[in-house]
Length: 71
Image (cartoon, rainbow, N blue to C red):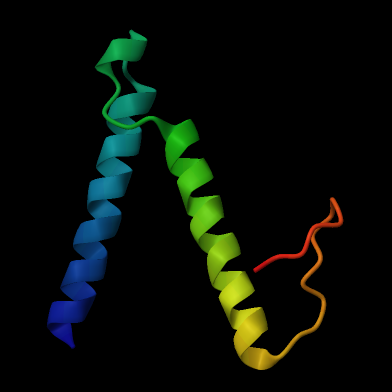
């Protein structure tokens, strides 16, 4: 259990360190992470997980806001 807590803490510490470094960077080329791309990737992963959960639980509202069917 300590190993799992240590891994989660290490991950959070790494992300927080990258965020602090990038927020203090003076030039755009000095940033470690492109936070816009990271946000888009996270949202895509979250949407895919939600669609998978909807399919597992048998929800029938697979339509997206633009009327296309989600698969």
